[in-house]
Length: 133
Image 1 (cartoon, rainbow, N blue to C red):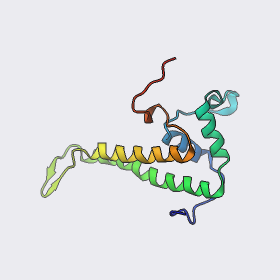
Image 2 (cartoon, rainbow, N blue to C red):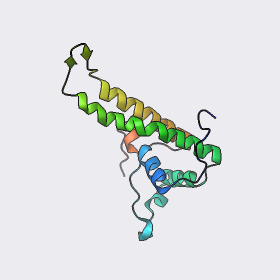
Image 3 (cartoon, one colour):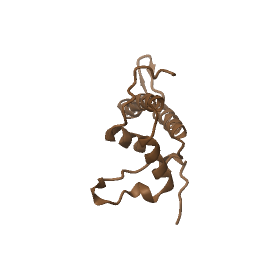
Image 4 (tube, rainbow, N blue to C red):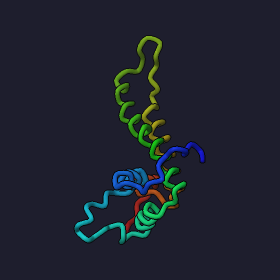
């Protein structure tokens, strides 16, 4: 089970779903009280919503394992800014590519989450390719 033992098999909370959407590169869907759930109008977003609502217990555990990896990777990018003003201190040398390296690792895990869910990533994960209508 690749480290998923002990992770919850409960249905995903709204907060977890929001984080999955965000990590997969999709925008917020807003409050559902307006009766216009925007994801219904887009095939990929609809597939993502359907999958999040229909995952098996083992799949829910795997999703939570991905989330447990992604949260600290995201926070590490922000924390890397603490060292941007120092190139060298005593025997310590700043990795000038630290932020880029952390973003690349974070993006790798985001893409793995998308692949596991069977959806393409949102625009942010599509390497700058834009869809023109």
